[in-house]
Image (cartoon, rainbow, N blue to C red):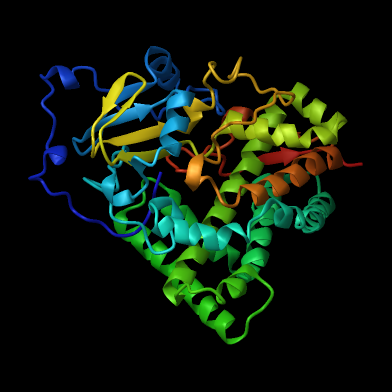
Length: 423
């Protein structure tokens, strides 16, 4: 879901902000966004999502502020909305589906936040960045990912047979990669990660979100000034040769840094948790590291850590036999779509031999994740290296004691205690 600073109070005089009349037929079957995951099933989406998807791929959704919109749970519906220009990504046109931080329509996206923009603003930023995130260029970073991975596995082995995999491995690899790519000092990673965690936590107050976002922007603004004065061989320096303003450069840098720090780190940690919880799949990857490409795609589908998205209808749209009216917010359940049996047979089973191409974990359409190839490089290197270096790797605590990232825009684990037999 979009998370950003600022707040604009809703206009109570407009119809879409009035509380709905529950006595009308239109609102007789409203649902609230399911968020509670089944007990003892840390990898499964909320159970109500599957029931809603079976009943209808689009359901009427009641938002905490009284707005009535939609919840898309079917794969075809979620994918179609991602690709349809009649649906906007602009935050200020949307409503927030979780009780807490926001009331009414959302504030606009900060400068440089591509996820909250439509064309032509989005197009301009995207074109400037696409040439710098090509598949070929990201694959050139494979050797560096291998070096960083080997260094951290060496450190884990040297320090002994227990570790928190989040701090020892899952966080450092993507942090080093994105910091080096952008030209951001790695020494500041803990400060960056703390601010990103504040922004990504759904229970953070508006003041906390604004302060964290402003702090990130301030840090990047200082870096942009330094890159303009003395360019180095990195992405931020490269972007200083474009027509982007300093404010835009700082915003884009902050946006890319936050995405690079949080998402892949949680995929590495939660993906390892999933593998350790599915020993036959773990054994398959250990026996055949060449399975890594398929394993990464299946883990992305199965876990769907970026679990929820949103769009707003710019005009009336008929979809899946339903009329979505202009101004209505549609919440996109990525985790439900990626478990849709109409698209993925036996979807609740983790199967590393599955060809999971077409999953929506990186989105779809013009807003598909810019850094997806970098994330793939990191995971394709990290997972097989980890499981082959430590053939006896296992959880150091019972699975139910692994602390999960509930109430976060990016799902995963806070810590992953692991152990292994010393060689």
